[in-house]
Image (cartoon, rainbow, N blue to C red):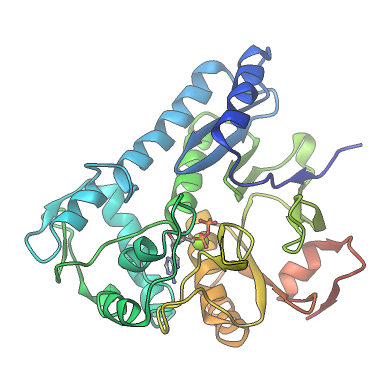
Length: 344
Ligand code: ADP
Ligand code: MG
């Protein structure tokens, strides 16, 4: 029997990861390949149709995207844009312009709940780093004044990007992995691969179909379980499935949990009764951006946003263990955990 593919625990300590790499390196022929890139564990499984050469092609594209879009590595184009905020436009590669244009589109669609200029706030909280902290009220207020996607100036002809005000900073953490999954998909298409699972730290692209055309079965993690148990299974063909939620990345400060999706309204982790939002979409970049946007917007506005988009479906999981979903999402979901209830 086919075991449903389960979204793995997102961030495993580097030392736990190392022997895992060795293990994979020894397997012949390669089944799945995993690497620490884009700030998370990225794994790609070509189900027997991979070769060391194709895996290397895919992972080198992921490394290239990280070297372009990371805000934490030194001297990436994004880092250069941030360091030149309020000073001068910075020449950047076209793929960054493509991603930024999409990020600004989601900024507009979500009325700023999703905002790629969230960088200063992400830095102040430092959730997911070794030294997370709670910024003071004044600090939050000052930081919020630096966040506005409308102050990003893209010049497509000159291929430059400029942040209007000094202190502004881009952070593409809510969209870059989706873009990266689409890029891997494009390379798989070129290589004539018929089915694959691309898992970039939980940002899933279930590419093509299983052998013989059967759908993929993707486990949806129970957001209340730390051990990666899943609450249900989605059956999909050639869809991306991306979840944003309170359990993905968080810090514990004085016994309280603070997760990493921040409100551009009040500067604190978003708190609106939702545990997570899962998006199913044709394009992974849309699924990634929409999951963060819908989570930040909350159920009513988030659902309206998803429903306004073609080819996007959503599951909203609430703190009271109720799940609400769009028709397409409910049609592909099999609920497995009886603690959760379901309605349209
Ligand atoms: P994950 O990184 O787990 O895939 P998301 O796609 O939801 O989760 O992205 C969350 C990341 O996006 C945060 O770690 C941060 O870098 C950035 N971010 C946080 N809040 C927002 C926001 N309101 N709008 C845009 N990006 C955000
Ligand atoms: Mg996202």
